[in-house]
Length: 213
Image (cartoon, rainbow, N blue to C red; front, side, top):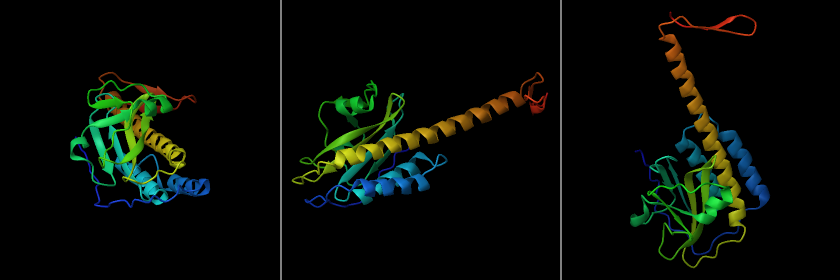
């Protein structure tokens, strides 16, 4: 299992800057659309999106975790601060986050569904989470936290959730491309090594594929 911890030793200030305007969020979205593509790996996509979140929402802490939807095994952890040692490996998600995105309960022991948000950075911090999905399956979580005593801007959630949904779409598209390329290569090898002669003929009766036999 490859887990990467990105933990710069940065402590957020008690005062939290206001939420970005819709125009600022749109500008950042346009930048992401130019820099993120389906050929990128999950880690590159996550880095691009978290970097955008940090530019748009300074003074917040973000923890993004991706995992296998079938086993619940963590594959990537990206945190912008020092995570609590007792919560590094356990994934928590709120039932509200699952319901908001229309996702099923993962049903894994490695993933705990809670009614309230579980703090990841500080004992007295507060925050919220957004579920990252692929279809109806949960494949990750984004935690957003504020330092103890800092008031969370009311617009933060409405600005951050669309970015998290865009991240979900980018991850889904990249994974679908990898899966389709894998199937293409697998079927090509399967056809090429078959004992029987196989031809694939196009609509204009041209030979598209011919195996060794």
